[in-house]
Length: 206
Image 1 (cartoon, helix red, strand yellow):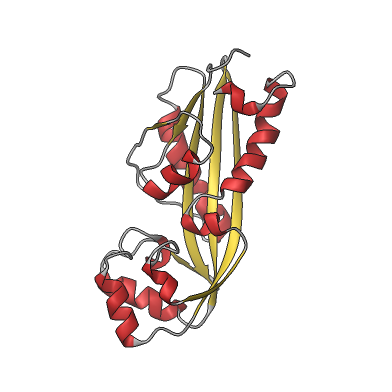
Image 2 (spheres, helix red, strand yellow):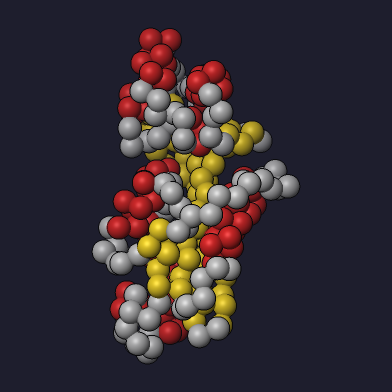
């Protein structure tokens, strides 16, 4: 396998995923296709996996060269309820009030679509982390909502921002809560790409 033969593509507009993937110091492009994020699945694992697969497929089908397309979807789940991105401040407030004082799960699904010389492989995985919120006072709630940090994030919060004022505990991969389980991604790439490397590092494929 020649070096720099595989094009690495992130199928996400998320600046947080861009930053996390950038920690690998590999060249990559960002290509986004806006699709309806809809699925018939109601359990969090299959829900997030299906959305990640749809995002990846929309980009992958248009790339004609050897490539690895990475797509992801993050959701928040409390009991049987799945929390996506709030549609407005009122819904964000409702989400946060429901999560306050409780421990919820964050699921991030990642799909890897690989095309090597016409051989296509698709692999998905889902990582779960648990996040515990303190009780959120009315003043703290309104201060947080005023930052507008809620509006583009599953569960109406981003762990790397001002929501740290009411996050009391994280069990599992912190990067997973941010939106991309980087350590797990590295391990999954090792398994997926190592057979193609002739004993060399899989990083050298890009």
